[in-house]
Length: 153
Image 1 (cartoon, rainbow, N blue to C red):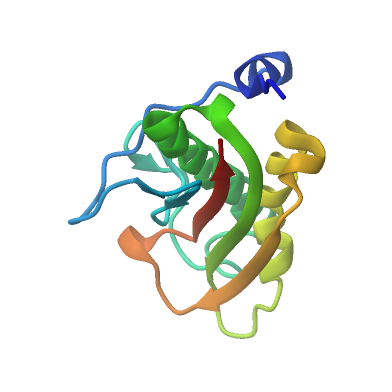
Image 2: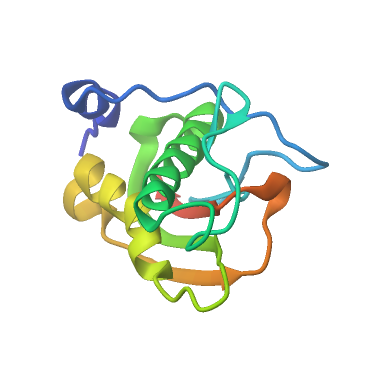
């Protein structure tokens, strides 16, 4: 089956960003057999975080959801840079970390920003397992971080 995810992005008016430069000693994505694992991706646009701070305090859940979408786009860019977007056979798992203010329990809704993007782009192929985890802090003060595990052909 030929997949044309690149055209699907174009049809949706979505442009993949350049692969985000690592902020420490790691690579954006690694392939092991038919699986690609991305490093945690932040909501960076042109090297700058779209938001900073904890969700439920400085960052609203709606802003964080949009940031999760941006982080997922960065993860797709990392996959595209390694193996090509059109080689994605399925989205296996999404892991989303949410820098949460005390008492904030809406992590699943925030990580929906990533999950909904993947469903929009990949349809049934984008159905995935997922974890949405609240954490005290994330790198650079980011409100969210997203990792993807995908099957490739």
